[in-house]
Image 1 (tube, helix red, strand yellow):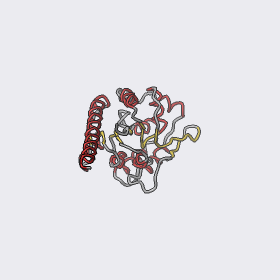
Image 2 (image 1 turned 45 degrees about the vertical axis):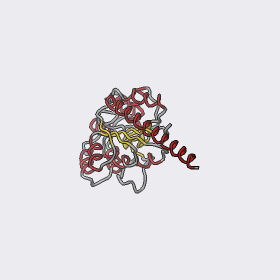
Image 3 (image 1 turned 180 degrees about the vertical axis):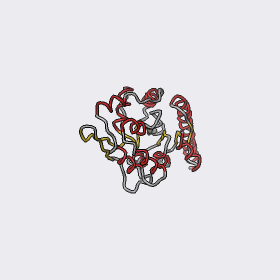
Image 4 (image 1 turned 90 degrees about the vertical axis):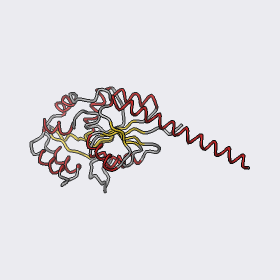
Length: 237
């Protein structure tokens, strides 16, 4: 039997149907956040600097924020995909360059308990917030708040990445297989990274099942080949 794959799943635009940080800023931040976003889009600043500056513009109480987070639209098939992975014994980790508070609220809504590796949203009192980066890495190629490739590097065995955006580019190079949509799909096609396209978790699950079946078949063929070589060696003796 092969070593169980570790499944890493992005949050914004993958589990959530939109970029939740952008939605949050639209609702609760001063309008200057859009100028900062444009600078990031042009590649003038990294995502870490972008988000530090944007989060400092938030003006919302914790209670109001948490109530709003309950309304974020999520992929309706995500929960069943996680439970499918759990039945197979595949560990699942959420890896995001977004906000831990957003992700943990979403998981609570779904009744799921999963490891979350993301940037830390810290309340400063009243309606002010700041962003912390417990999973940043100096020298990160993507200048991200959370270096996903470092998080994935700690895994032994096969790595599966499910994502959609720029923060997944570096991590995709560490994965054995990438399930991709959006900008990540275009990146995989342009760079020749092994990938399978998907649109939602409902169509991803059967594709994932086929990949697992192929993995098992490859492993079985490898074992049979080794057994045959061992037999041939004994006959030669």
